[in-house]
Image (cartoon, rainbow, N blue to C red; front, side, top):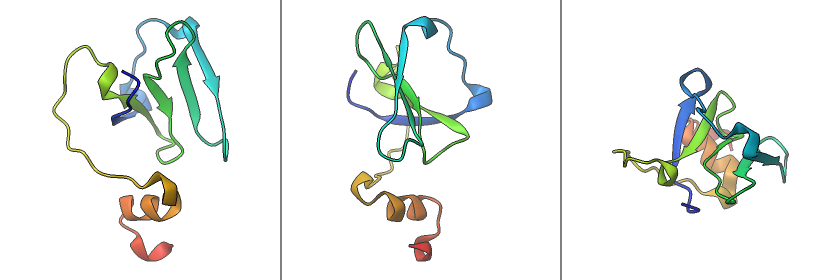
Length: 93
């Protein structure tokens, strides 16, 4: 469950049913992303990514049932360029 496979879910479509009291938050780098993890088991099941400020990134590996998703590669080492490509704006960087 610790390997992250991102599913982007708009804020208004996400409901955390239980466990909010166990979440711990941390930020690093630019501080734009809010990383949440369970203070009991350490699993990071979802977080607020800087690439999608209007949505949560949910870890598909933490879901009870498998989901059918298309996987798109994202080069986190070259974040600005990868984000521009994701947005279809390759000439911006």
